[in-house]
Image (cartoon, rainbow, N blue to C red; front, top):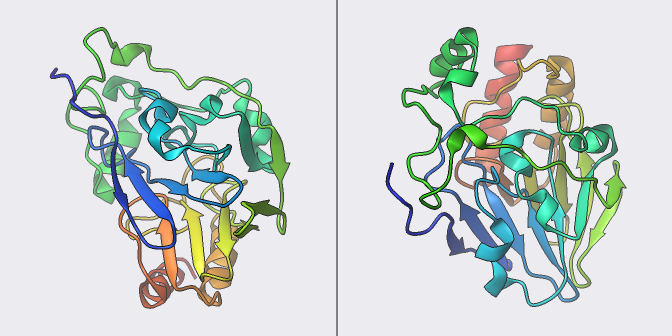
Length: 255
């Protein structure tokens, strides 16, 4: 397998946001990573798979303390969480980070056949032996991939605030995809970081700890939100009109 020149790519967006992603990771696990510049500290929303250090790759962006938020427990979102001194998760899932006993792998053979079939039906066929198409360095062994356990330094719940000094993000508990899924809402900017609660792609609500009635309630809540921009856990960002389309399509399918 070839060696990647760069593991993370990035682009600067509006509102002091930088979007980062891992181009060599399979689309199923290619989580969006968000850096938000604040006056007193910066915010990192989700930290990718953790194949190679995130913090080293964004060192040029970090000129002040940074707080990393995991929108939920799944391995494509928490791989680099341990690298940051300040680590935030929802109280429902925070205890599951240490030890980290959740399913996690980047090797196709580790997935049960019925899971592979289900993913293919959703548009995420896994056809190669690994869920990466390059190595971060020559000695890397995909079979040795593990999420490093860590203990969140702060546990949050609905209504708590992540304060960057000049920007304030309210915690929204958005269960359904997972019990402790959460979003971060900047009311002043009309900006929502939604994790996997909603993104512009196939929404997954049939995992072992998913809950469809909770997901329906989350969707109804999001539909009423006066949002201008949604930065999801996967795929491209979108505005309110697309949010409504995605929510209505889900509600039509599940209610």
